[in-house]
Length: 305
Image 1 (cartoon, one colour):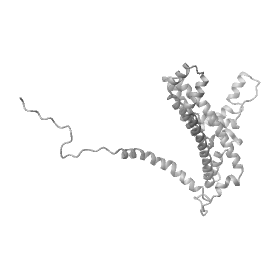
Image 2 (cartoon, rainbow, N blue to C red; image 1 turned 180 degrees about the vertical axis):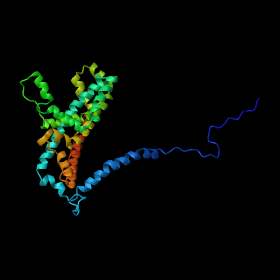
Image 3 (cartoon, rainbow, N blue to C red; image 1 turned 30 degrees about the horizontal axis):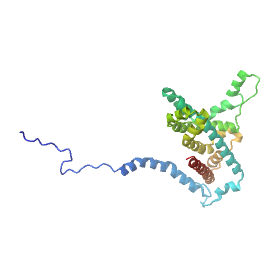
């Protein structure tokens, strides 16, 4: 019989150290470090700087001696008109967020359940289209639509020549309309992500058991899409109450909000400490609102379970 042929070993040759892969923790840190470094530089560092500014008696770039004080956080007490402005801003943010929630949910429902393929892709592109245009251009375009003698009036007078004007520029509804136009895509996308993951068999089972469409909507679709609605509400409400471009352009004299007041402190009055203090006060109010809202949601979900 022929001699056995030696088989080459597939292992590491003797004397050569085996190569070790990068530990998982090191790889994770290496991948996350650039993102967290950018987050630190672009978000947390400016926020911390503004937070320190809010306790100063004057803007640090001037020649006034810097003294740390709490007087700027007493602005809502010493200047009561700010309370009304803050309440109007919160109320405006509520109506804008509610409008976005209603319109965004049903638009996302139509995308997730009534469209497929290229039609869905085309509609998603159209939804994202406002993000591709300048915000200032979008807001000024609404002035051409909502003003007296604008596009709405032209449409009305083409049907009813003797009708009056229906333009409502420089009103609070005009501000809400501009805010909804700017932030509606956030709500649509978050609701769409939640709705598209719902299993069709759940809806088919409900239909086979005789559930009406409103029952399916209220008992299945809305509860399962609640995470998307909550996320969209946060992404909409937080920037809306601090918006200043839409209130200033579409609101005119009635467009005084906390966003415009804070902007004036930074750009006109050059009172950065007061502007920073007002910003952090509104941030605390918003966080308290969402903390309460999330607590109610948790209790309701626990009771339903």
